[in-house]
Image 1 (tube, helix red, strand yellow):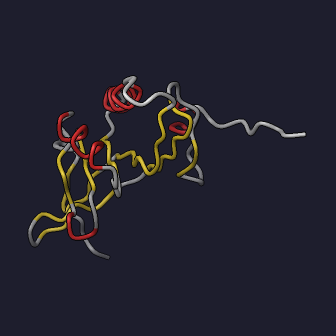
Image 2 (cartoon, rainbow, N blue to C red):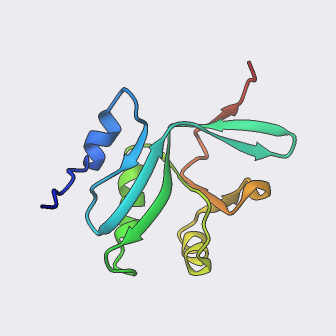
Length: 128
């Protein structure tokens, strides 16, 4: 007998204060949505900037591609004052969609990554 795993909602994931800071999330319009929360580093020439608070979209599969689920997720996260970081994008159509949505490509030396709503969330990353 297969037992369905209960996934946390986005609200439950965001309010969680202890580890794990990543996981699969139940969100309308997605058959699979894997998020992380935490600051990221953005290379800006010679400077490394810290961006936070940030939600990382690590893996996403829409139930019905093109139905606007991703745009709704981004709008929801931005309304909660998060920067939205989409990491390791391999699908060229999705790259075009992200650019059209106003995402900025960053950290190109390590892959195809995009960020949005980060402008007021940057500080210099001080190395310990």
